[in-house]
Image 1: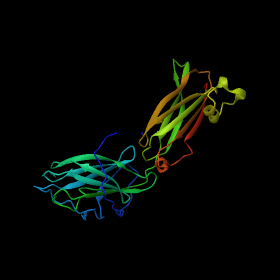
Image 2: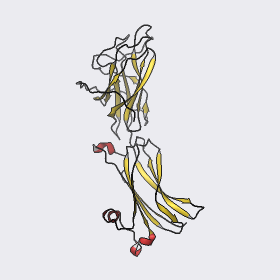
Image 3: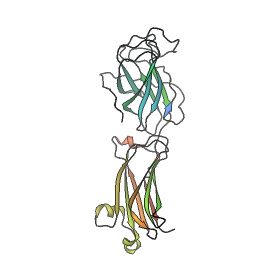
Image 4: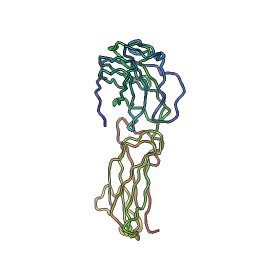
Length: 286
């Protein structure tokens, strides 16, 4: 698995060519570097230079990806004077305009973080992020050549799976099934559906538990069912929960976990390995 920001769309579409440079190491943060692409107002990115003593000067100081896969950035007014006016920041992913964010006037030598909630990264492939400040040239600045920041990211790809454990309790006499959902990838995991089926051995006719399809289609089947939302999760993060009743240590259980993503478009559900979205285990005396 939300902060709110003031953003709105303007009738402006511009395709920026990707900035040259090597891909960064897999991370949710990349170092901001000067870009080489033309901004909507024709501004060109250049060196920062000395701090303006009596004028505003807007620069991008940070570009990151939040746990849900949206672009985060920081803008700093490095000049000593206020911008006095509001300004628009345009966020590009792979050269396509994805978000336009309205900033209120920014005081001199202050910094402001923002989330571009309409700019979501493409999962499982390398991408470039660019932020162009004061795209409509509302603010008078000491330099119009440093309003753009670029950062390249290597492919950020989640890998969503689950593990099933026996959680011993009541002084070792009983246990419950414990499910742990984990993002083993290097990219943010979106919210997913986690459906769990638990079948005790006392109801296994002929020694075989009901199939998941039988449990879903026939409410009379002796299955304990649990369905919930989990996430978003950053890489390496986990979320655990219990399912089913407490059972005597002598009880054998068949447990199956199904993980599914129903986001639209389906590309938002891309992950490194879809083969580990179904996990099964038999729990019992040991």
